[in-house]
Image (cartoon, rainbow, N blue to C red; front, side):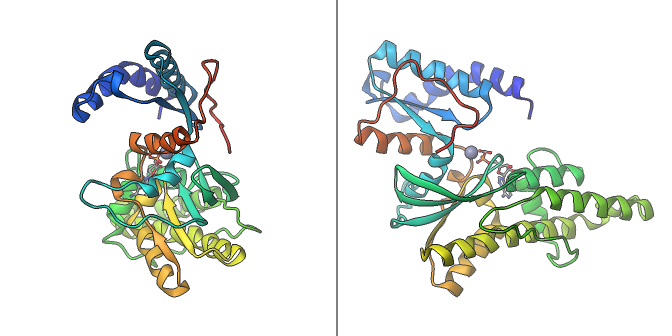
Length: 298
Ligand code: KG4
Ligand code: ZN
């Protein structure tokens, strides 16, 4: 990902995308109740495009402006459903494992606006680990979905990689990347075709290790907090291995599990809209001097 290119792409796409959304929803921009935008966390150049557009729209249309935290919106994707597939939503309080390209968090969710991070990665995010290791496997960006695809036909126990177990509820994924890198260097010295010949087993083993690491702390968090309502969110929650593991753990531990539909796991406008809807009901509006924040927390 090249931040400069990402912000330029935002700049050229934002008006056509909003136009298309209005056309598909068959509404006029004057019909909207408020203008919501992502304040952060994220790439600052891209955030600035969205914030500036939202402020201009809110000022021109005289509509309230609502800032949304990107990671809280991922959590709230659990309250979205696709048309015709409406189902149960999580009950409060619940724990959400939010796993994306930039973050890995265990969040205690008390209400749509009350969330507390009780565990997180101290270095790489789970999605970052998937993408960086995929790069080592010579797969294109983003490698997470490709590792998932090749893992389907591989043996998850073919290679043994370390599961980081930090004290408390925190994660670390940088050691895994280093360990895969050293393992491959050794193998490639003996067999230059090692990656191509073992691609599916390598992907399955890496996915198995990342999922095992994620589940380890999620289980610990459920035990420590006594909360058995569990949800997952973020791009990595699209991973078939993680979805399966969380479903299996639910049976073993008596959890009530909620998993968002695949298309709502990765970044989407719907989750930003829903997070803003809850704030709209609480009349929690922003002023026109609001600025984006690459590390916006909560
Ligand atoms: O939430 P998201 O769309 O964007 C961020 O906020 O970062 O997450 C993107 C991340 C990427 O690292 C991508 O490789 C990963 O989610 N991802 C997956 C899968 N689908 C997306 N990782 C593993 N398996 C997948 N199926
Ligand atoms: Zn995201």
